[in-house]
Each structure stands twice: as C-alpha cells, then as structure tokens.
Amino acid sequence: MVMIMDACCRLDFSVACIGFLIILLIIMVLIVFWAKRMKRRNFMQNGGLQLEEFIKSKGHDHTLTRIFTGSELKAATNNYAEDMKIGTGGFGAVYKGKLETGKLVAIKKALVPGDGDNKEFLNEVIILTQIHHKHIVKLLGCCLETKTPLLVYEYASNGTLGDHLQETSKNGNVMGWDRRLAVATQTAEALSYLHRAASPPILHRDVKSTNILLDDNWDAKVGDFGVSRLLPDGDEHISTAVQGTLGYLDPEYFQTLQLTDKSDVYSLGVMLVELITSLKPVDTHHRDPKFSNLALLFIHHMKAGILKDIIDPRFEVDNDSMSISSKEGHRIRSSIFSVASIAYRCLALAGCDRPSMIEVAHDLQEISDILHATRTKDVTKGSFGESASTLENIE
Image 1 (cartoon, rainbow, N blue to C red):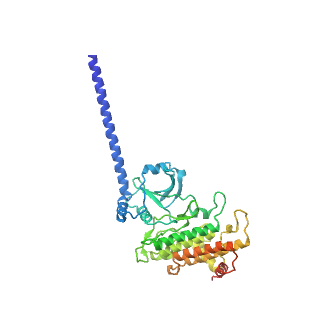
Image 2: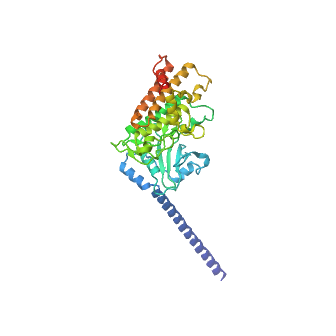
Image 3: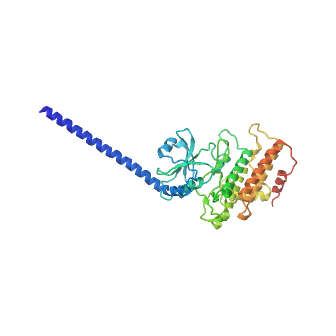
C-alpha cells in the first residue's frame, strides 16, 4: 500500500512538473510573441513602412548600409548612460557609442516615442541616404524597433564648431583663424554640393555652428538634416512654414514663407560672423538690445567702418609663443576683413542680392589660398590690403 502511495505521489509530482514546464513554455512563447509584436509596432510607428517604400523605390541606389538592433545600441551606449551623452537638440539627445567591433559612433535618440508622424527622423534618413560628400556627416544606419527611433552616424571626436567658438578648449587653446577659415570653406563646399550637385537639390534650412561637426583632423562635417527640404527640379523656392534657429533665420524667408538656396547663404553669413567675432548669434544679456542679433551688430560695425572693434581679440595671440609678428598679424587681419566682405554680402536683406553658395565656397577658398601663399613669399600690398581698406570705408 505504501509503495502504491509513493508511486502515486511521484506520478503527481511528475505531472505537476510537466504542467509547470508547459505553463513556463507558454509564458516564454507569449513573451517572445509580445516582444516581436512590440518591435513590429514600434517599427510601424517609427515610419518603417514609409522607409521601406522609399528604399524599394530607389532599388540599390541608396547608402543606408545597416539596420541596427535595439540591444546593439543599448550595449554600445551602456544603456544610454548620462556620461555617454554628447549633445542635445530639438529632436532629442545624441550619445557616443562603441560597437562590438570597437568602432565609435554617434547615436541620435528621439526626444519622444514614435507617434506615427516622425517627419524629422524620416526626412533625415531620406536626405542622407541620397548624398555622399566628405564634409557631410555619414549616416551608418538606423534602428526602428525601439520605442524611440534611433539614427547612427560616424563619430566626430572634436564636437561641434559652436563648442569651440564660445569658449576655449580644455587645454586653454583657442581655435586659430586658419582652422576657422578652413572650416568655413569646407562648410560652404558641402552646402554648395547640396544646392548644385544633389538631385534634386537639397536646402539644409538650419545652418549654424552647432550643426557643424569636427572630426579627428578638425575638418568640418555638416550635420542635422531633420528640417531639410528637397527642392523640386526647376523650382526656385518652396512655400513652407518657417523653421530654423533664431539668429540664423533668413529675414526674407521669415516674411514670405518662401525657402530658397539663398536662405542657407544667409545662415552661413551669420556663421562667418561668428567665426570672426566668437560672439553668440543672439545675446540679450551682454549686448545693447538693438544689437542683440549678431547680424545687425555686424552690419552696423561694417557700415561704420569699425569692424575691428568686434573681431575676436584672441587672434592677436600665438598659442605657442604668446606673440605674433606684425607681418603675420597683418595677413590674418586682412584675411578676416576679406571674409567679412563675403559675410556682408551673404547678409543682404534681399536674397537676390546675396551670392550663390558656390560663389561663397570659391571666394573662401581663394582667401585661404592667398593667406597660405603670403606665408611662403613676399607679395606687394594689394589684394587683401586693398580689400581691408575698402571694407573699413563702407558707408
């Protein structure tokens, strides 16, 4: 009798174990099913279908090389640790990440969960999959299965141009004029490519110093295409609501709601003034209220012939010797005045009075070439000297 009872107990225990395992298996299947369903739901809400349609329409003519998983990017950023955050913006936060291969990347995480209307996210993906230029940030891939959409870019180790204009670097050095001029030229080249070489043309719509990234070699990489627009072939403008950043906005675009390539030219003009002065585009605390806008301050000083009063005084210092020769000082000053002349034309109120981006890029390159040439041989006073004199007499 006892043996029969023991056998029954063992049988009941086995049945219970089997039942428990079956329930556990069902739970695991449900969890996997739920996880897949959530990933699919996130994919749909993050615009995955629209992106698939776009890629199919382009066939193999796109540069989006990889779809990342959420777990990959979570591991790369140490679960989006605060110390991995390298920037924030209207779209969301940007994190530094390290992939399993050891490659460093920048990961942009949307500010809010997908709601089926991630226009800026999709817009940036679509724009960047159609262009390739050495001075435009490269999109490595994206992730759509997470609650918030993620974009993965090449990593720019030296931050943004804006970081280096408003304050000195950690070692106390100041970004010199040669480097600023090079970044300006590279930025103009990239924007000229968007306006003239891309098909259809692309209007960036938010050119500013904090959207210019600096790589290991301190070369410029134009980034943040969230509000960029494609310009239909043959059209000269797009009628659209105003978007951009205060201080950089083209006043003509603001008044007419017509976005043109000259709107980017105006914004670049503001950035050129930043490079010359190291002043903020808008400052309501440290400047006369009527000149809180940097463009207005700059134009006033140009017309009054007193541009030298707002040139960053740190250009007078050589970081190595703490001194600068009078000849070298003259070269830099002349170069600055020449760039100021370009900025002045870029900031014309009427877009038709502004130069094209390709003209700006050409003129900046020419100024850079002359600056370097004068260091290797003596040249007669002219070119820059005459330009400086002309600028100081603008009325």
